[in-house]
Length: 507
Ligand code: CLF
Ligand code: SF4
Image 1 (cartoon, rainbow, N blue to C red):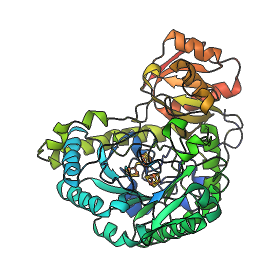
Image 2 (cartoon, protein in one colour; image 1 turned 135 degrees about the horizontal axis):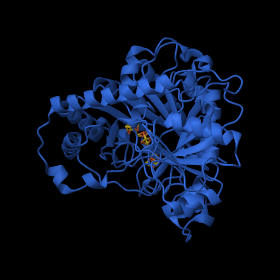
Image 3 (cartoon, rainbow, N blue to C red; image 1 turned 90 degrees about the vertical axis):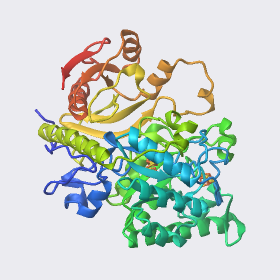
Image 4 (cartoon, rainbow, N blue to C red; image 1 turned 120 degrees about the vertical axis):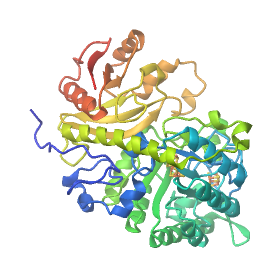
């Protein structure tokens, strides 16, 4: 029996083709009854654009991969969470450095990777500095990639300062996806984030710098939308600086026609050597981030929120949840003369689409709600270990990240992902001697259960001692989350199967 008010809706994840009046697009947490304007089927042009883009569609990211080519070393602004030694922190994680490639090397690398990673659907330029502060290198790379690997989508991410002058060139090259980082629209907030910007041939500081940057960003966004380019906004959440302001940013850019908003956590540690890191500004906890994402979603009316960002590096390769950049970093990759087999890649994508369709049909038959205003009265958080493809298929000990869902009777809402290594909870937990298992337990401390394909007795015992049930499963994620959530929400203290975990039916 269902708790009062729960509507039975087929599971439709962002990016799936909309049927009838079901929600679609990057609407990760709304169901038809509450999705406002998204109760209409998605525009077919937009649907085609997001269909296999792993960042613009949460569902697609379970099946498709991206790669970044690090061709843009310079930057035209200074952010207080960046010290230029590492990749651009507006799109990637501080503390990693990517080797800069020439456009020709980058195009050769794309061919090499595309031949070996059939899931690859998108090539992005996101650093290590700002792509549009290195416009010639960036556009030459895009030109070569478009010519030599024509089935791959092109993507760009920029701080926006140079954007208004480059939109025509971006459109002419057929770039369909552009991300602009907007951390503020209020110069009073902005002057705390940006010590300077370089514009009009000289360095600007203070409120003037922040005003120029904000105006240029919004003008750039306006021009992108007018050119029919799908626009995503990234915002770095800096507690105590812009966290109270980002819901206004979300509403502003939603009003301008931005498709998706990605609020990312600032990752701040003294060893990164950034102004914020050295001066005790901390990043948000996963819980604080999730609360702000919900606020932005509401403030934007019906803003699509990206909740599956991995803050990948400027030379990232692979599915969003995996990092294969090392595997493709050798000189042989840059020297390789590949023959590009377009037919083989098309056949691989046709197979991916068949698998994807099978999962979609399975999910729809379950009729589990993935969001909406009328959620069950009782829900719990469930952490899932998965490598993608829509199923629980990762061993607990091998998971480098967990997907966090809210689960309840006939209900499974994706919240976000948490990386086992990534989150820093401030100086008191840096460089400590806790075991990886202890850190994982702390990371998942607010979850009632962990669902994974396999778990050993010792980690299951440690989780149990922390009040987290371990559940073994190999099924569709939503199905397990809803079942486990329903049981645990009803019996939060009794648990469901003891510390050794419960064996569940296999898919
Ligand atoms: Fe790269 Fe960015 Fe394009 Fe994606 S990433 S340029 S839109 S192809 Fe994606 Fe990586 Fe998050 Fe960026 S997970 S950091 S949002
Ligand atoms: Fe660093 Fe990126 Fe900011 Fe430039 S835009 S200062 S590279 S975080």
